[in-house]
Image (tube, rainbow, N blue to C red; front, top):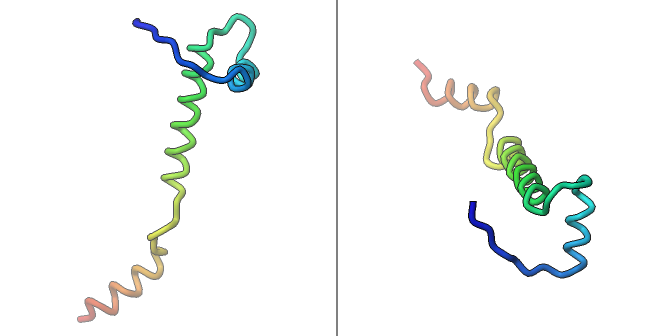
Amino acid sequence: METTTIAVSTHLRDEIKEFGSKGESYDEIISRLVESAKERQLQEFLLDEKGTTLVSDALVRAKNRWQK
């Protein structure tokens, strides 16, 4: 795997260190943080109620719309 160097402030470097365990590389720490962020974003997306309709409301509208 290719590696690169990224510039971060010493403050951010120290904060990243706080998430790590002894012997864990920055690559491992950041990878774990990114995975956690992805999971959190997916959870927020799946639980977002904006633009949703309750099933009971949808059934009432459907019955009104397609009355026989």
